[in-house]
Image (tube, rainbow, N blue to C red; front, side, top):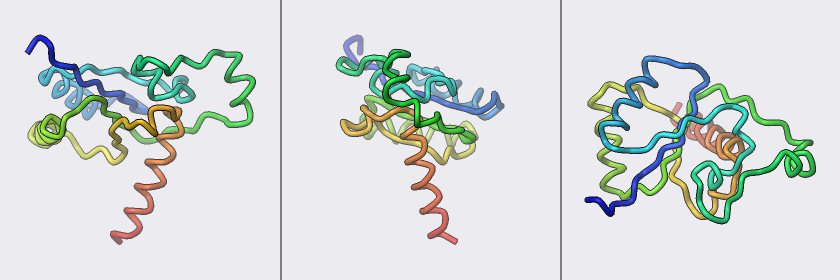
Length: 139
């Protein structure tokens, strides 16, 4: 299994918690790489945070030129962004999180060609909006 491609999770949490400790324990046991995301990184693209070729990190000049009018979102909920997961490994991860008693994380996404170019903050806002729509439909 030396040649296997490692899965990576971008993980954001507004504050440290027991839930985060349990989640990270599951990821470590499964050999999944974890990259903790800070609020300051919300302007970076998903691709650059993962080190995907072709997605360069935004420089301060780029942000000043293009994103100045768009403030970084206030991210009040945790978010999990998964990269390079096969369907089997994704199922295994979700099962292991349940077994470990990790409470459900509402904002989750798989990296796609389309969202790899989005900023982490943009993906957060999209997932939050979708979650709110879905929650409203369930009530």
